[in-house]
Amino acid sequence: MEDFLKELKESNIAISLERDDLKVKFNGTDLPADLVKRLKENKARIVEYLSGLKQESRDKGIIPIATGESYPLSSSQHRLWTLSQFEEGNFAYKMQGVFEFSGNLNTPALTSAFDNLIIRHESLRTVFRETEKGLVRQFILLPEDLKFAIDTHDFCNQQDAEELAKAQVHAALVKPFNLTEGPLLRVGLYRIANKRWIFSYVMHHIISDGLSMQILIKETLLMYNAFNSGKRAYLSPLRIQYKDYSVWQQNQVKDGTFAAHRTYWLRQLSGRLPGLRFPTDNPRPVVKTYNGATLTLTVPGAVSQSLKSVCRKQNATLFMGLYALVTTLLYRYTHQQDIIIGSPIAGRGHADLEDQIGFYLNTLALRVHVNEEESFNSLLQQARRITLDAYEHQDYPFDQLVDDLQLKRDLSRNVLFDVMILLQNVNVINHKISNQTLGDLVIKEYNNGEDTVSKYDLTFYFTEVADDILMNIEYNTDLFSPETIGQLGAYFV
Image (tube, rainbow, N blue to C red; front, side, top):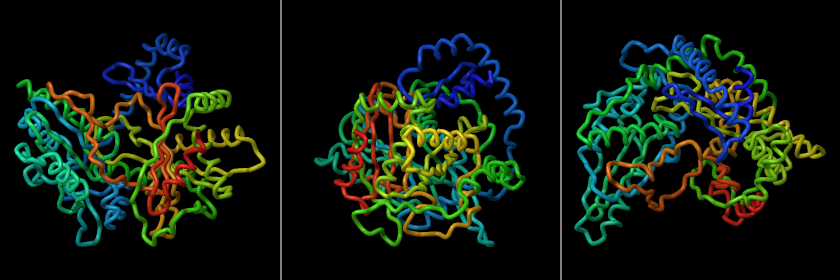
């Protein structure tokens, strides 16, 4: 069973338990037929095995800590606190969504749903303050002290109702967060016509990540629908909160639990670290900016299938192939043989973290050495080995690693790397709520035209859609012109 699960992991297929049933996450639209057959044949054994692992993890669970006045930050929160002291950073690190509601909206039910979410998740009522000793700590407010309220306006009788609502949404999205006072979640509801509303939410990244948004939306839907039907919403109680995770993580760092992981990353990032010398259209600002735009294109099916075929023959995943392709592209532009690219990972390996809202996301710094005399297949094999090793050591906090490396801070760039790559899984529910149901409401995503934020110089987002690969290149507009990014995109088509 361990060999089978390891085989699945190396193929970037994740198996987990959800209410004693199997949940399969993978990149692509369909699993190979032979693998589906093996999963069905071994389902009972897999469930039994994973149940045992889950119970073992529970037995070694994260221990809830005693109530105190304040609590330590996690490693990732420390880094984000520092970045958010700059105005640009405060604006850039946020999660948001804007939608249009059509139909009969039960506003008291929506209000009750969010009020209950804030009671349930301490992270939604957490603020960050410096103590007299200069230490930044988490402070958890009581729900009644948070002063959270949905920002509601009725523009229904105004001639320019939609424009007024758009302005209100824009103001909410760009308004800086006050990390010391909160709330760090803002929700807006603006009526623009009979049975039509614009709904928006924005949340600071220091208390949230992509999976957290999925949880927030899922629980909002569940509670709204219950309240709208006059029923009581039921969610399993949370055994721990984010503060418990923060203490657990920091203890793991201090007591040597992560020693092997730390040794691996320090070895990977030893010696002189490369700064990517990618040619830009404009001089790099002295202080990093986050102004961005996105180029969207589709990698044709023929090209996509060719890449997938090469990956299969090399026993590599699609992500590994895309990572090797992006590395090749960067090498062609920079002629640098030592290249570091970042890639995010969920950071929720512990069973206690499944239903938590908080900043758990971790980052992997993938370092590859390009030899122009070797073939693409050789680079792909190196990418495969580096990726698998990184997954094996993914638990070590990236932000703690940055502190361990004692790097000289350059305010004009990101730490360690300026390029990020992600392969997004269309089989995992996105945190956006379009096509979901709130009673009999119809919900669709609303394009309010807000500016794109680019946290890195370049971010390559890939999504497998049927036979094609959808690609978004997010780029910093203070560095690159649309024409240059168009040339980068042409490389993949």
